[in-house]
Length: 439
Image (cartoon, rainbow, N blue to C red):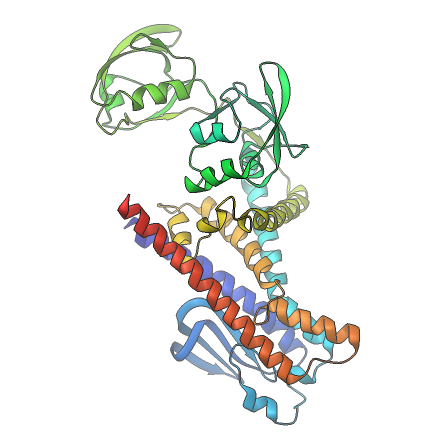
């Protein structure tokens, strides 16, 4: 049921983004009286699942869920309808319109994607505020595993800046460390700057970034799962763990480590409840999980926004998501980090979906993916919007359009590049699944 729900979320998100992106091309095309022959969700190579002609446009759903398209008359696109281009230009065709109109039509999709993300982020901030854990004021510093230690970090460090820039939110700091060159921390009362090595980042990517960096907190229980080992032992929400066996416990990571290394053992646990200490008996199951969750309320901060304030805040967040995505290419194209091995295609993205229906996750992921779609489509690769924009800018600057032969060749080359990249990404997804079974 979990994988079904994840697939449904992914299909809905992709469908919304593709329809709105193509609508961004469709609207200005119609406004400039350009004929739109087809409007498709997914590709209809050989056949379509559904189609209906309304006016001069055929609307449909294809069977190949790799995007979608609008087929604009008189334009060299993925349909490669060169026969139409051999005829004299018609007034309603794309090639008959002024270059500035064609440029607006081609930029329509990415513009809609950008504004969609901006609107979603603004509404999320207005409705929910912005809840985060401050990176520079963690009461007890960070906690790292062996992977984090390879980057040069130590448990108890206070993160001050990455690449000389102050980091406000802990989650942002984690991403900036992966993308950055150095991190400044406070350790034992001294500020030190640590270079972030490619070898350390390679290990982070090998582990897919899991748990290499966290925040230290007091071992106060927020949730006790019903029927769990902890519940049967008498642990209640609000309890603070002060001792396990003979080991005194100060922080949550110490408690979690002790439980994780005590599978199958009987432990005596000392808790602080309502100002009084109590001793409880606990048998740790083989899987090393007892059914409790941490209380983070003393670490969380929420910034609230009125409607007018949420609009510029949403814009700022959209720009930040975009710049972070651009910066990721620096790491991906650095072979020493091995980050290219973790690039995810549709299969990997499905696995990133929430296992339960979570509207907050849904809208955040939709906004993030909308920004990503806008960025990718603007890359100057023929067959993408950015490739068409590149040729149009050449025409506007030089005063003469590229030849039809150049446009056709560019479209073919761009299509080959995109299909090659998709094959590599799909292959990477499949290989990651195979590796999990092997391991």
